[in-house]
Length: 120
Length: 106
Image (cartoon, rainbow over all chains, first blue to last red; front, top):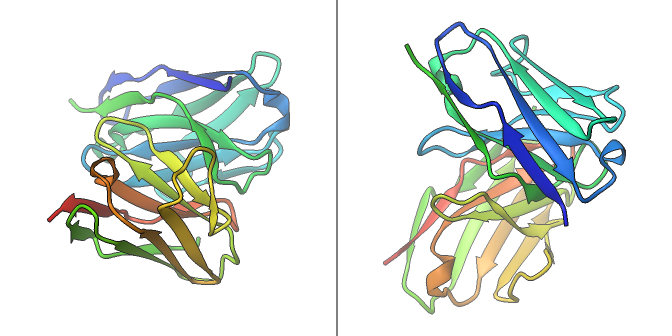
């Protein structure tokens, strides 16, 4: 059974940093691209970032480019999202997601989400 | 970046009626289009991929159609559990979500 468990969310001040983690199990992590999707309170889904299976290719939404960095550790079956220069508009539930092995994919599997709140 | 536009923003439908949701891409995404259902407080659930293929366990009353830039999700006879928010997503070039359509009880 595929399991994606996010951690690392919390309250952070504007301009601050936070690192999210996603622990994956139930599939061959190193063979799959992985992604982050977020949802601000009462708003729709927004694709944030993705990384190929070997980490050689990444993608970012324009809204986070230059501030967020996605990475992975295939030896630990873990996906990361380093977030810096955080803004109030980054407040959202962040989901770790995956689907097919390809970087361009639909999402079969979603974590439970971790809430990031950016506020002073 | 490929932009996805969903319409209408809100759809009011009576139980048992048919619901038709639309999704438009700013450029062709071929058939690389997925639909999701999200209920309050839950993560989204994959309904349709490849524009028209139902995901595992999805009832036959959900159907998808279209290719290129125009897509439709049809719910043939709305059940109480179908009132939710629906999102389309392109995965032709990485991925982008539409803004969502809320299906509410009329």
